[in-house]
Length: 368
Length: 267
Image (cartoon, rainbow over all chains, first blue to last red; front, side, top):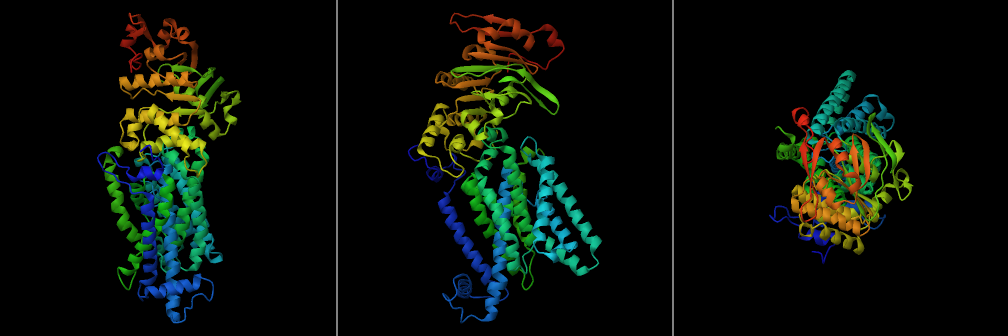
C-alpha cells in the first residue's frame, strides 16, 4: 500500500473489509462511459421516425465537421442530410449539454450544502429558472433576442438558490430535512407564480399551451440556435466548477476544516452557487424543467469513483450527457409517432431513486 | 493574541483575552462549558476575526495573512468530526497537504511522505483504506489529528481532541501532543480534564464567562483559589507515591440543590 501510494494505486483495491463497496479506478470508468456517450449520441441521431443508417450519420457529420472537400456527402439524399444535420444533431448536442450542466450542478449543490439529496429541481432552482424564462416569454423579451432566455432564467435560478440557501443552511451545512422542505415549499411557490403569470396572460391559448408544454421539459425542435444559446454558459459554469473542485472536497469536511486548510469559504461558496445557478439556468432555458438528472448521475458516480470532486465533476459531464441523450432517445421513440416529454422520462428514473435515498436516510431525518 | 475580543450578533463571546502560544510548549485552554475555550482557539486559528484587538502570527496580524499561508502555519482540529461522504482515510489525511500544493497539482513524493508519517504518528496507518464515514468517533478523531499533522504546521490547535477517545487513545493523544511540542511545535488544546492538564500541559489559560481569568504555568493557574470559584466545585489534592498529583472534585452542597447544569470536573 505504502509502496504504491499514487491515487490510482490506492483506488485499485480500495474496498472496505466487508467488501461492501468496490471502486473501479477512473481509468476503467471514463473509457467505458465515453464509449457509451458516443454510442448513444450516434443512436440519437440515427434512430427516429425516419431511420437513418449509422454510416450515413457518420458521413454527414464528418462532411460538416471536417474541412470542406475531405469527405464527399455525395450519395446521401438532401432529406437525410437535413434530418441528420439540422434536426437530430443539434437536438443530441443540446441533450448532452443539458445533461452535463444538470449533473454538474447537482454535484456542486450536494457538495456545497454537504447534503447528498440536493438537486436543482428538488430544491426549487430549476423552477426559479423556469419562472425567469416564463417572464421572458410573456413579456416578449424572447422575441427581441434569444439571449434573454438564459439571462432571465439565470436571474430566476440565482434568486431561488440564494433564498433556499439563506433559509436552509446552518453554519455551512443544510440538514437534509430542512433543505428539502425549504426547497419544496419554494419550488411550489415559484411554480404557482409561473402558473399565475401564464393564466393572467393567456390571451392566446397557443402561446400559453406552448409555455406549459415547455415547462414539462423537452427537447423537441431544438436547433443550432439553442446550442449556441446554452453552450457558452454551460462551458463557463463547468470551468468555474472545475476551478473549485478541490475546495468542494474540503467543504465536504466542514466549513471550519476547509477554512483551516486554506479555503476562503464564503467567496468559494458564492462562486460555486453562482456556477450551479448558471448551469441550471442554461439547461432550463433550452429544455424546460428536466428533473433528477443531478441526483441520479452523481450518486451513481460516487459509488464507483468516490467522493473526490475532480473525478466526480469530470465523470458528471460525460455521464450526465450520456444519461440525458439516452432518456431523450427513449422519450421520442417509446410512443411513436408522438413524443413523451423528457421531464417525464427523467422523473420516471429519478423520482423512485430519490425516494430510495430518502428511505435510506430516514434515521437522520427522524420521520418517514 | 493581544486584547482580542469578538462579538457575534451583538453578543460578546470573549473579551480582552491576551495570551500567546509558544513553540515547544503545550498550552491548555480550560474553563466551564460556554466560557469561550473554543472561541479563543478559533481566534488563534484565524478562523474568526476579532472585532476588537488582534490575533497575530509571528508579529503579523492574522487578518492580513492570506488564508492559504495561515493554513501552512496553523492547523486546527475541530470538535465536530462528522463526515458524511465516503472518503478513504488516506484521502482525508492527504487533504492536509492541500495548502502546500497548487490547485490542480498532484501530491509529490515529499507530500506522500508527510502523509505516511502523519498516518503512522496518529496510529491510523492500518485504517488508511477504510472509509472515514464508517469509522468510530474515536478513530475519526485520530484521523483528523493525522490530517493536521500532515500539514506540518508549526502551530497545532485542537478543540477537545480527547472528548470521544477511550482512555488509552486519550493518553496516547496527549502524549503525542507533548512529543510534538518537544519537536518544536506550538500546541494549544482545549481540555476539560484538569488532571490531564496537570500531567501534560506546560501552560494554562483559564477561561471564565468569556474572559481570561488567568494565564501562566500550570502551577500558577491550576490553584485551588482560582479553580474552585470558576468551576464552582471544591478541590481536593491527592499526592500519591508515584508523584502524579491528582485532583478530586467535590460538588458544593448549595450547588447540588439548586443549579444542576454544571457538572464540573467530570466529563
